[in-house]
Image (cartoon, rainbow, N blue to C red; front, top):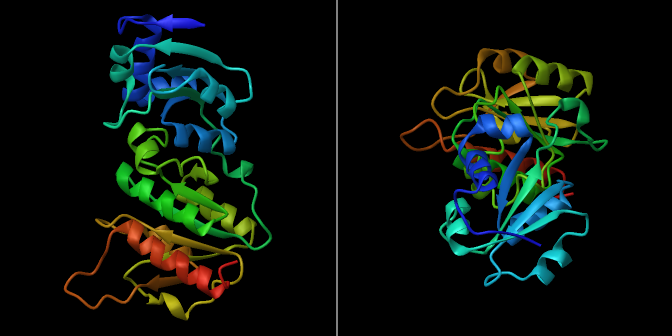
Length: 263
């Protein structure tokens, strides 16, 4: 088994770039995953693991071989190298290099009566991670990201999603592309917006449905307001007129799940 004990090792330097630079992730088609749970969820989600780096005092080779059945490269590292690569404060002693997945709309596999969440132009990794956690909790068919502003494999998103990046079907595209996809699939979509809206709970979400949310600062762009099956609003009874996007998404999603009797 290979061992690396220097932070100056060229391979370790390339992994630091994967953590820090979206360009490096896109060029190589790979990214880093940290933690046993996250790696386990990635494998379950069909991600291909190329390399595993581990700190032997924290995780054993036997544990790793039980976790990953497909061939992969195993590298033992020391504490200094691990701390150079680890993104989180808590230490689990294991990192993996995985291949990114296609995020094409055409690759989605939807049920006969899908429930989808669409988020437009979300930029903050924490919000994206929280949205993915909610989508996993509701077992949505897919999360579509319109006009993405962040690299989905940003370590902040991997971390804030607590592995739900790997448990959801995710696709990206322009707003025009996603609207065309929804119309082709005959999926009604409901845009959460202040303008020309009706209360969200008055709508029927039991048929093929997509719920669309935008950023707190600017909301959804005009194309989503104009093309929607119906614009919807969450009644606000305080002084402000918006809430965190992940909270708004959760309210809408679980109303749809309630209507569907949580099936």
